[in-house]
Image (cartoon, rainbow, N blue to C red):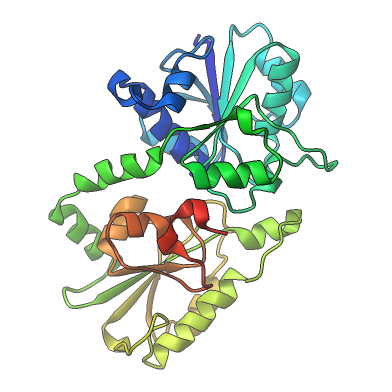
Length: 332
């Protein structure tokens, strides 16, 4: 059994961890990167790690070629039971939304057992809540890993110990660019065909978020995703593009891509209301990078896929005014 245990649940942290482990598997990637070198040198670091997870992260781990164990532990007692006697010397996690206690439980259990804890951050949205316990206390892992100085400052601003923050670069975006660079025109065309797009169709990919679900746990937000989609569809039906200019509704195909943690049929009522007036297809067909490449534009609120579209040189628009062009570390 590996002496390195890795845990994640949410898609963003999972993608970031997979990219980090990919980089760490190649010693050349670590040279000249002090943050990665430090992580590679932690006590008990060994690849492949022992990966424990739960949905929706489990599918992403398997797609990346990792064997996984499903773990349903929610508190420090369960985390201690997982770690005690396991031979694990270091724990590596992402940072999840406030409804996921697994990361914080593992940090606490690891500290009580003399095991080092490390966390890789993916996106600063709801940053403080990723470290807040239900009783209001803040928990920190022993070490935190971020993409750049902007992210590091934002983490320090919410109270993270500056001396415990390490920069490792934007590894997920580097990995995404490598994967997308291998996509063929045939793959892209095949996905457009599955979506039902003709050669001359303009495909708009609407990427969801699960903020509506998160409000049930106290998450504060200024928009409702279903209302954002409804408003966008109304604008499109009128022949106007939300990003400016005119658009021909007759040549438009709207693809609504649910977030992995969206409630089932979250957008059904909105889609049914507009289906007779616009061509709409709700599907998660295609890997995220392939879906971005197959679309003519990616729109949404503050989804990571908007930033990824920019990275891949594809047009992307935030319907809620988020400055996606400035990069994810500056997103709010």
